[in-house]
Amino acid sequence: MSFGLSRGRPLEPGHAGLTWADLPTEPGVRIGPIYFFQLHRPEQPFDLEIGSGKGTFLLQQSSLEPETNFLGVEHAGEFFRYAADRVRRAGRPNVRLLYGDAVELVTHRLEDACVRGLHIYFSDPWPKARHHKRRVIQDASLLQFHRVLQPQGRVFLVTDHDELWHWYEAAAARHADRFARLDFNPPDSARPGEMVGSNFERKYAREGRQIRGMTLLRRG
Ligand SMILES: C[S@@+](CC[C@H](N)C(=O)[O-])C[C@H]1O[C@@H](n2cnc3c(N)ncnc32)[C@H](O)[C@@H]1O
Image (cartoon, rainbow, N blue to C red; front, side, top):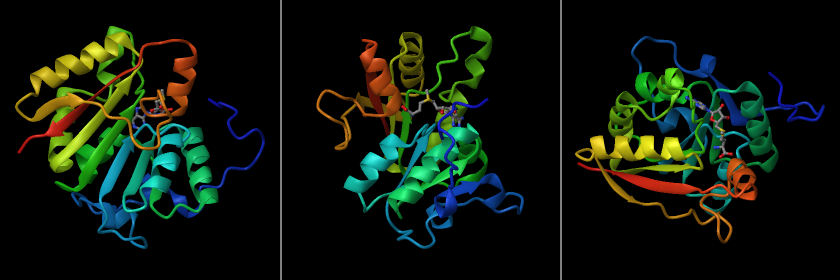
């Protein structure tokens, strides 16, 4: 499917974009930030955005927070290419995009305790009951988030979708032994009145939808 994002202009991810084929092929090998930021201060805190869309949060926040490395994971090819092209043109060494499934990355490829912040903004709600298993937040994915987060690491969740919000609340309650539920504080890059300032937030806010967020703080 084409979203017409490029408007005819070639999108060039260049060094800002990685694909699954760039990951190590040895079975069972897990990777951490050094793999994505070999050339740019791999020791810096490492944040992951699941479903980065057009990359607006990554671009905005990374310029205010150069001491953090950000990896956006996006499984829609056109959004991946669009966001990576933006990051390449902005010359942002602390941002990389990976083309692929973020839950797959976290579950099977990332090493323990390597992520400081996990950002999930306006995740697809998959409203039909038979599609709920495609939602990013599941019992199994929360266990994996807990594994890859550092002590005191955080999951940031924001949505405009009522039913998905209740899904998040129920999941947070079931996993209260692993995560403490806290309020959501907007990142510095959000404009006044915004929760995050991503593309979907700006679109949904214009439609007058209620937007809610929470933070899950890793216990232990
Ligand atoms: C509704 S859009 C929101 C994009 C962006 N976060 C924003 O707020 O503007 C959700 C995005 O998440 C991506 N996505 C959903 N599940 C994903 C997954 N498991 N791995 C990677 N990307 C995912 C979709 O392709 C889509 O681009």
